[in-house]
Length: 131
Image (cartoon, rainbow, N blue to C red; front, side, top):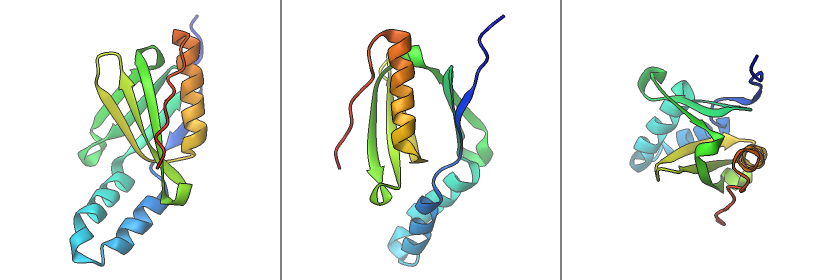
């Protein structure tokens, strides 16, 4: 019998990302940013569990990416929205990267992912950008 998978975080991007981008949309030049934020709010979902990180997104939420903690070599977080939410980039062994945009509770999620990576690989996946 396997270990039960427990969810640490499940949800979409922070609502502040959508609000700020809608306000910026009133300037014609920022309309592409506003459209991107609306698409993220509608179809982007994160699920961080004891076994993996899952990201469902794309048009109509049809794309799904799953990564396991033993494949992670580096995690970088960048605060956004005066620190209320943040972006995170997860680098994998094969050099590919997974970007998690507008994550609420990004500090707690970052710590949780590093804890899981260290437990699986023996090395923390540290690294934090300062902006």
